[in-house]
Length: 410
Image (cartoon, rainbow, N blue to C red; front, side, top):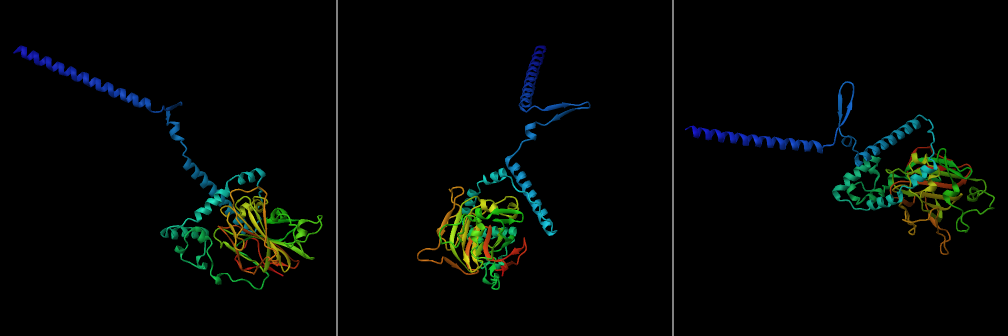
């Protein structure tokens, strides 16, 4: 009996020893795992103060920068800043206070021109040609209409599903009665837009906006030596401006019209005239909105443009379509040989084309209000013409104008 009790007690002691060993081993492993886990975590930085010890989170976790968030933050901040600047300018204009001019330096212009705006404009042009699904057309066009204040009641086709792509929507035709052509004034507005500047050309300089000028010769290019273009070839001592004036007692006038993205994108003949020559200047495609025009001197001379020259009843007349960002496509309806925004071009070069041939001695006759061309999105029209000294503009700087309304008359 005593022996059996002794054996039972020994077995119990052995079981207890085994359990104790297992428990110690399990606790040892758990402690080791915790140590390994704690060792793998990045060390915390500790700062000592007079009162207490402070622990900070790992620097990597706290100050991690994500590119997307950074771009959104900076882009949103810049957009907000630009809107604030635009709001201040509008308030100053309403109060009649002249907006101070801050011209860009040479390095700022060079930096802006280094942006691949021509490539972006070609990409935008191709995107505009992509046919949208029928169900997507109304939402996309409605967003554009809401953003830029487009009046679709003037469109010849108001149904948004009719326009297969953005390009067709931009080039939409208007109802004939929505733009009556003024018959009582000699020069009408060739397009919808905003009047940036107008007046006489003085000292061979033209104002793109008030206080910011560009060279007339740089803008139009040198006079041709042929008799095809109706330029008066006087002695070399006379200025370029005097060479353009063909009749004694006349003056040279100019008018700059800015087309916003929400405006009607086609342009028309501003008067009865004959187009005898076309000169195409490949160049940059910087923005031409009034803020940039006030910032960059000779902006229109930097940008790609198509200069149409000829004559009207009072002498020299020219219409220039200036390209801009996302507006590399300038189309002249009667000029099928014109191709704008080409991938390669020589800086400072230009291409001449004469519409006067052996079979056509008069060039291309244009009637007032006749369709002349179109932009892909929105840009600028510059008129430079000769007229008698009693020619008067019926305009105000900054006013909105529509195609067919009067610019000026004798």
